[in-house]
Amino acid sequence: IELRLARNAATAGDVWLYDPQSSILVAGDLVTNPVPFLDTACPDGWLKALEEVAATPFATLIPGHGAPMDRPAFDAWKQRFIGFLDCARGKEKATYCADRWQDWSVGGTPPAYKLRVLAMIPYYVERIRGGELDKNCPK
Image (tube, rainbow, N blue to C red):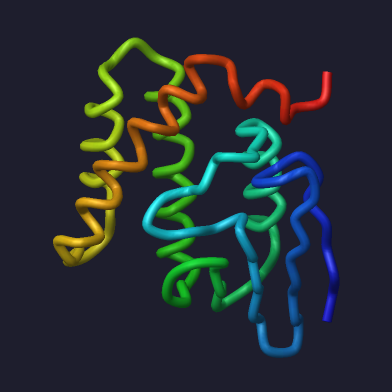
């Protein structure tokens, strides 16, 4: 098993594991559902960490929160993350970013999951726009 460390991503140091024999990647909090938990995050560092995860030849990804994912599900999650950061750094209403994240969700989403997304995304948009997450990124 390969032990990897992503610095300044979801937290100051996120450990993730890859087993080349089984092609299973355990992502920890680099991949979470229903949304990325950005409370202690450096968004650009997180994106860099997701690029490293994407470059790994896994078949199954175990997220820190949520059900296991295959490669296409992870790729979709990563694209939603990129789109969310773009939206959060833009001028659209925070609720628009939540609607966009929800629109990008794959498959039938339970109503309780949708309510959590609609509550959490605007909170994180405001933290990004307010510069609160900048302190988590190296200068």
